Length: 245
Image 1 (cartoon, rainbow, N blue to C red):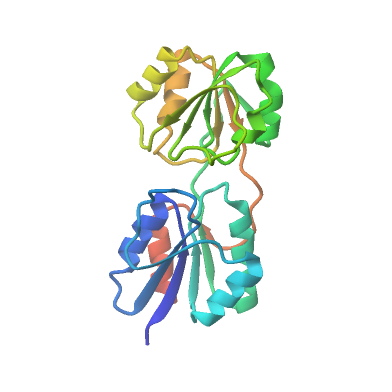
Image 2 (tube, rainbow, N blue to C red):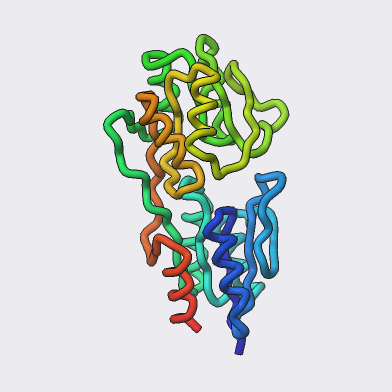
């Protein structure tokens, strides 16, 4: 009898896992995307797009779709959906696994902060020209810093009406090379970088370039996530799936 797997996705790991899991004859795979990215990479298998309506809505979805296994492969900063997944899976009494990307290791030129708000509070003391590499969701947090200039890199443009700080929006999709990152930093006369500690290889080149150019990096630390079974890569998640079948 086939089992049904729900992958909460939106990351490279989620797409890779969906492709591997879809090869299993005794497993139906459903991937869920939040729908915030305009041109996402669609995974193999069945797909749903949009929110669930909180933990209660996700619980009802798990029941209605007769989901047997849940894998949370969302972004390390997507804390709300991860907490909702933990609550819903526990209530539905189904196994849940999280794929948690290893964090980037601290470097001497980093300034570690707990939130984007804390990063914004520090910036006027650090630099005048900032490379903001946090995506488009938190731009409003920096909008009041009108005395600074920002290069704001993201995949999709900001939502219309979103307050953003002074500067230039750079639309680009990772991965990026060290040479490309260095070129942007030099051509825009960047003096500091703001980044989330997302981990992974797709955007790590900016940290290498910043190190080479001796630029400070304001690094926003990850939010607290729910406890539970977790792995650090797709191969380990694949083994977990097979153990559940």
